[in-house]
Image 1 (cartoon, chains in turn yellow, blue):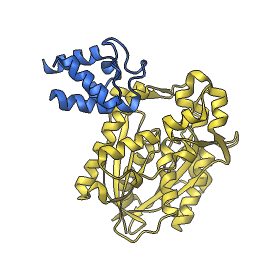
Image 2: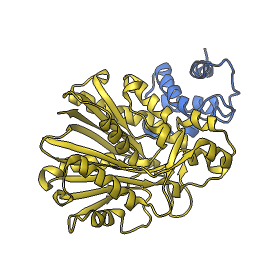
Image 3: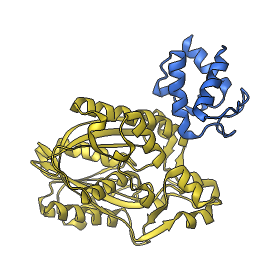
Image 4: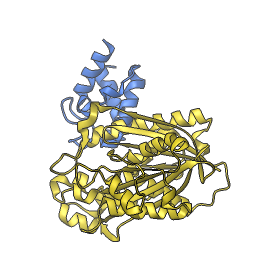
Length: 310
Length: 78
């Protein structure tokens, strides 16, 4: 049995409201809320980056799991907004956590990176030992606060999430997963080496609206769980309207889709684990509840993972 | 009922509006559809015309106007 032992998260202190952005983007706070479901997001300070945020989320996770850093056998760090081409942030996160020569690998997959990291961890943990998955994003460095870029600039925030996956009992037992990639649409959502994020929103929405429900349905069918039987869906917090659409397509009550996008915006690959950490910290589990993770993002990469409370 | 009439009927149902865009007019720029309505249009087209639209064809440009939708469906059914 492979389980998620705990989640962790960390968010910058600076709150950026819709009113603050609207003044710079020639739009209204109400428009931002209407098209995204976002009321505010967090921006990291100049001395906070993917590494510092990732370390903070990792420490929070390890503390909740009552796991010493020295017990971690593999670190996986997901980020699409790291400060340099190489090395990726994984080795620096590992060093600051005191992991010594523990292997640390990067998953440079925006949005769906934490889900891919969890799937990798679920397969590696039985052989390697405890795997710490960290997702950290400084998206505020990837946007331009000008009216011409408002469609993307309103969406993103900064933050980090983490989870510890290991063999043996935990908070959630991993049941199964489904992941996929399709490079035919790689140009429709990307962060070039220079310049801000480029997004073909219609293409993203059309593909995500099909691929995510399909992945969710696949893991639920294999797990013998009806959509209405899932206690909570923990999705990449991309856009509230997209989450509502996925809920409708899957045939599950919208209130089962945990949402904190109104407070943090879209923190790319970090968002699903930040949501999971918040949900886990505010929920009493009785045992047996089904939990479904799902994400979609640049690449395109997407997938779903089914877990069950111990 | 012509194919174009059937497409217009779908667009009216999805947009919940009786406005009818011109055949060459952008459904998006004209404000007839927002991005989140397009997947509903695609699903309705599949049901109405009995075609399966693969993910690889989900390029928004193919569904930009009524005329383009009509052309796409004709090619799909050919």
